[in-house]
Amino acid sequence: EQLRSGLQRIGFDTGRSSTHIVPAIVGDNARVMEMSRRALQGGVHVQAIRFPSVPDGTARLRFAPTAGHTKDDVDLVVDLFAELF
Image (cartoon, rainbow, N blue to C red; front, side, top):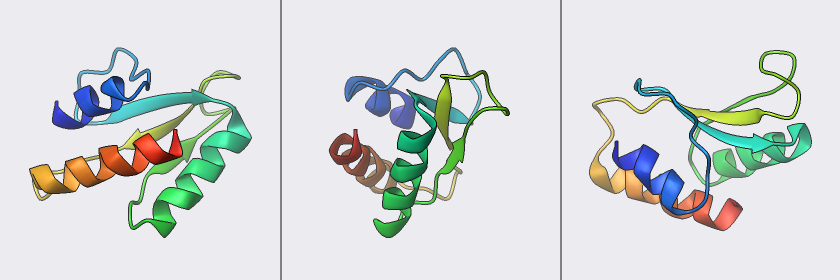
């Protein structure tokens, strides 16, 4: 929930998911790929999902946090994506 609410706070649409998989809808295929690449350079692995896996225009980042991630880890991710968004 910390990740989901943090991403929403900085402007991401996280859809209706209520599972541990947290989407961040970006929309544009090229932009989502660039954000994923830059996140990896910042030490965060997040998968970019784009058409045809999702409807055209709804490309998204797919976060999969685990119990091994600390609150500080989640804060780092939110801060990084505040810069990328």
